[in-house]
Image 1: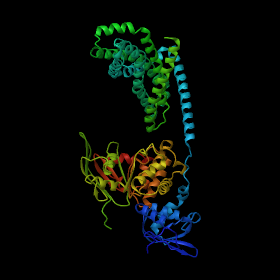
Image 2: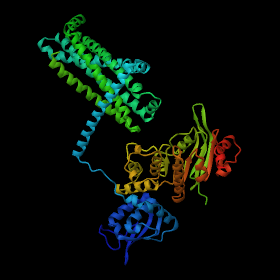
Image 3: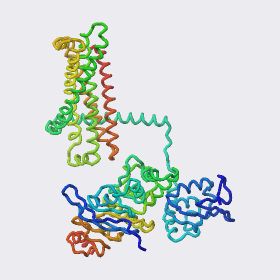
Image 4: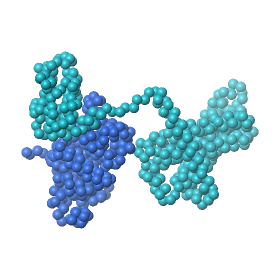
Length: 384
Length: 251
């Protein structure tokens, strides 16, 4: 007999079960193959017939052709809470194998019924929590900076503690290997800026002042910022990934157990290397940018190389170059502290390496731009 | 009853470059058996397991699961086969971005059309059957101890009601108490759910306590295949030293 409607009637039935009303309550005659594969169809039939668990007091298994633990769970969840607890209560005509499966599932019903604890968190809560995280993170970065500086003082007091081999290796990584990409990047930026300024100054016949704009702009702002961002993505990400995976493999703990300071072995070489490397890279970037500009100025502005260099000598004062280079150690310290801290503080799981690395790059770039903006205001007020 | 074997491994040859790992490995596993594969380090036990489940192609030979040739089967057949067996990897291989419950639910979400509430209930059932406390469900894998991670991984391997289960070093990295508890759990799965289980192990206690049959790999071949009591009497240097490692303690 087919059961057409969605409303509960005393005798509901489908391919999977038949529900009969008796004096004590309802008896569900389970039929067919109650296994995981047919469970979606069974669920649909149960929902269609509106069988709520309170309605079923007994289940008859004589017409079952198959049962696995998923099917057994579905059956047991149909029974009322009070009958499901003990022995074979509420179950009729199950053969021995099926009874074994039922008995395997039955002890775990309480764990299954336990309502999942989902955290209720609105948008406001999320914003508040994130703000809190940012505050804690900045505070921890400052604390880490303090610890690093204290280790630095110890090393200054006894310079033999400086790990020269690691330092040299890091300088090789951060400076030497970064030169090609910095040269390429700044060469192209120099050209692009020249092209842009030529476009703007041409109507006024002020082509010569393009040289002023490009050389001062590159040396004072553009090379420092762009190279710092490049280094944040390159060395900063590398620091965090290295340290986080060392932490994951307990290498950092091994260093501490050997009686060495992880700060001296891992953090200081990276910090010092980046502090040395970044000004040098920015200087390389200055030269490459000006060179790129000079190469384009000849066809674009009809400026000979000699004229360009002459004008550069007049426009670009040492102060502009030094201001550009003087920012570099600050940028470098910010990047190194953020990167090393994120690496050492990363949780010990594979996923954290990726998350921390991404976070380092974002934080470093934000830090570099914030420092640059603060310095720009400072220099403007000082009239430099 | 003359049922064909669930697993038929036939003349497997594996070479990595010039290095020969397997040189004609063959055995069968029948439904309901609990079989252990043992052998020294580098005898290719884990490699063999990966070849059986279709992760690594052997240089030569044939693997049949449920009568299907794993390495000749098309993608559709292989995907179907893979819903019929579960695998527990050595360190659990839980997905680190999902909670424990989501890990167990993942195969159900992928392979069935069940409603979320039903999937959640089934995931909790599997976790409870693997002897994990209910509050472990919402934790991340990194928050679990090694033993609990293995249990959670076992719960995931059981999610789709497999007929066959592969365990790669199930007790390695566990303390003896947790290891014996895990052994009992594995044995009860074989007894209560009628699972066929193949495990790779170094653990002698596992062999003596729960395993029906032992297959010993050495020199690229199966050098012994039978119940533990028979295998330990086989006249072979490796087998002698392997079983004597704890013989003194046992005596």
